[in-house]
Length: 309
Image 1: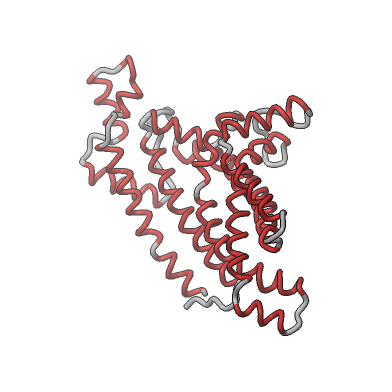
Image 2: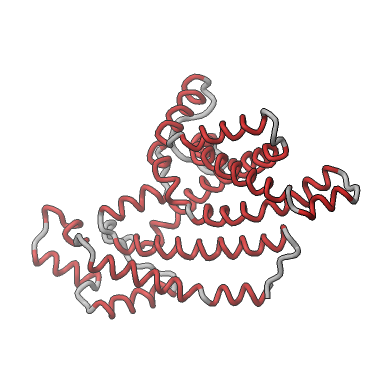
């Protein structure tokens, strides 16, 4: 296992280097000039030349990229083009921590309800419970965020008065409940349907019939043999979900006024703040690698037959 982990981690710098080069070149040769966007109505050739010299944008592209990689290796992603005197790390750090807490809360809701519901539906195949659960998950999955979020606000904030409607004050604040539900409810549908399909596939395997023929209790068969093997496809999707934090939280953060990284990244794209965009791409790629590595380790934990060399 250790050799496998080291081998996987060795490829990480090459992946991050390729991602950084692609985003860096796209930012330099793509449409839009960050200097023009920053200066706005105050744009003059002289002022633009001074800013380009200040940010090193007048150097040859290979020199700019080599300098960026050297500083990035030391954890310095450069200065923001939009926010004067602010480094990318100081801007992204607090916002990513907020979004990570929100996404973790949403994943807790998704896994706590989605996986057991899907497993229960598969065990009740042939009864009215199974199609009722499948139909309910389809409804949850089909509802867009801009309908779910206002509905939750009306029910839990306006009618029942249980939680505030917007703002942020940490993971243990009541204001995390509604946005976490907004992100987590569609995930419940996804994981419930995936767990149901995976469980139905495992139930029909020969080793399940053998386990029952040996006289094992149904609880042991369900949870030790069926559930553990059915979780493997779920773990695969979980890895991609952990890395896909930004996409699902964008609209939710805007609706609930959460100062996370999603809305900040959207502003960076519109403002051509390429140091921020490049840092986000690197962090996203790194998160994907680490998430997949964690999932591979969980494979071996869930199913001891899986060995890595």
